[in-house]
Length: 133
Ligand SMILES: *[C@@H]1O[C@H](CO)[C@@H](O)[C@H](O)[C@H]1NC(C)=O
Image 1 (tube, rainbow, N blue to C red):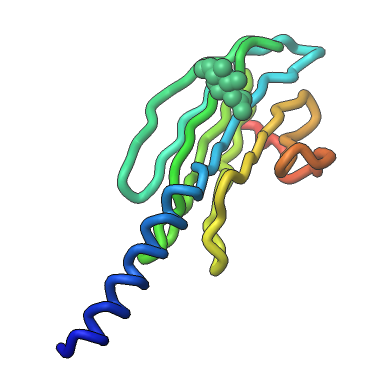
Image 2 (cartoon, rainbow, N blue to C red):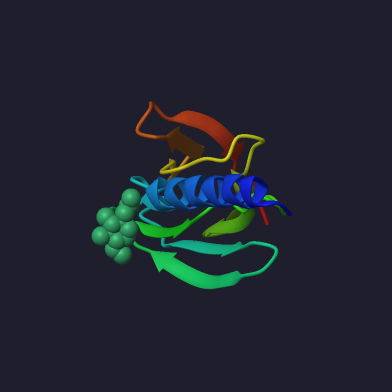
């Protein structure tokens, strides 16, 4: 490798490093808004590498959330099981895209009728129906 090439390589690496530092983690959050049943919401999420275990959320209690950087090379995805009394649903809570995301906030809201998603504070959209188990 000649000197000019090494220098260019160093510049590229530095840019990569500083962009990485400015990229805030993405967050996936869950909220129990089961206003009629007041059921406890159980959430169990996992990715290819991590099992995040069981979490129990009370109606209008604190959200359960976790944060991560997108993995550039292997892709990032989190799948979760949600449980509400006799109902449950498996959801894809987060799926990385071709564009590396920074600072995204996905808020999943469990309601009595269905499961809703709000991306980055935008209005909720209905994403999944509960299934009787
Ligand atoms: C994540 O949870 C913490 C407490 O565990 C809370 O302080 C914070 O507001 C939550 N963040 C979101 C985006 O829900």
